[in-house]
View (spheres, rainbow over the protein chains, first blue to last red):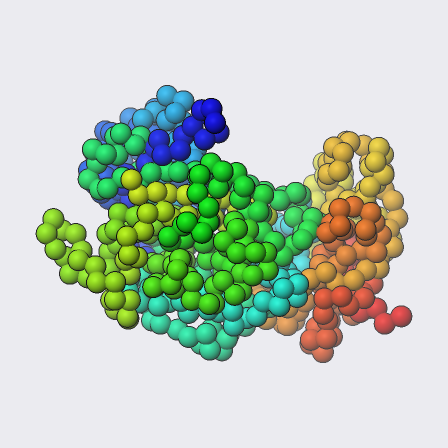
Length: 411
Length: 160
């Protein structure tokens, strides 16, 4: 294969990650949190702020812009861009970062997401009423009380249950398993383990979703640093290489995607072949996943879309022990957005970078050189490091109609 | 001319420049459902768009479409966002396959029209009807009058 489509495989790396605490009620501006997350990511990489000459963010008119943050950190940029959007953004922007570095536009890119997702703009819409009138597309959707992501995605979930026999209990297993993972993550917002029965007994939101099927609205900022593989080898941690990216792959009729079926299958199926061809590996070779968990159902639909199981088999895949720590292919070992915190996906990538470094920040004792001595005992309050993972995949979701994914490899 | 209205506690606005939505809702206000038909490939589309999703032809004309179909999927909302909708929980949002054009496109594609489950006079349906609606259920279109030039297409159980 000539250079081009596959030519960037393993050529770039994620060299640094950083975040602020995952909390409800940060009492801080998105600017303050973004600057701290970036500073932590730069320090984590062992770089200086002056080494960063590219800056990107994603947001929903709810956050500080790159042009403000760069000044706070004294950066002189050769490239910056702020992109509108939530889930699917982080994988996409990592891919864009490799592209702009490859184009010679800059050498090292920091990407951040900062959101007061609990205190400020809440994706559930349960905060302040919108001031702007409904117009355009909203006259065919929001006007019917069909507004927030839970309501807008629910017809796909209901149809999935109808077409494939997926049950609420199968979906609830995602929350139960992620809560087990979160109980071993000291920085997770919800560290309490919950059972499938707890999920099924929680307050109904809109069919088929109950409260514990939904992620936890969070105030936080997080950042990652993308640079060339050669440079990453001189950084503080073991390099985590970017193997392949697909970003913002869409279904037909992105605007009104339910016109085009089958509505129970997510957009990732349009990007799956490209992802695995570029990655040069298959789903069964992946050691740890980060399937987007804005809702329990999104996780199982993502696994189907990207070929981890057959279409319709997602309910079994997420409830048979595969995705649990100690299982064949653990998912969202931090507890994910259902438990650690909801950041529109960036924390799920950060967790997998730490997994591939073989150095997740659990409660295991610190050994020489400040690295944890992982026990791989996954009981409550214990370890959450997967045993020697080499490959990770993150599967981003922006609704049933939009998907992204990234495959990462430990060098 | 633009339309300003209030419905279920929310302000609605159709700007004067939005000819496609003005025409769509004007037909609804006459309780006479129309969709755009492509002048080249003759396919219908929903909701109003600036070109044909099938062949990208810009020109279209409005065509009357029967308001009958079958529930493709739905959600029943128990936890509403706006105070006005909270008074009506549980309410159902239906995604309905129109009979028109069904099977004429790719096998899984259809004209799928959103609406609430309503009574025949266009008010949100009582809990008993909401609890009875399922995928595959026959429904027919009714309208909720909002303002001059603006009514919302809705769905009611079709027992005929």
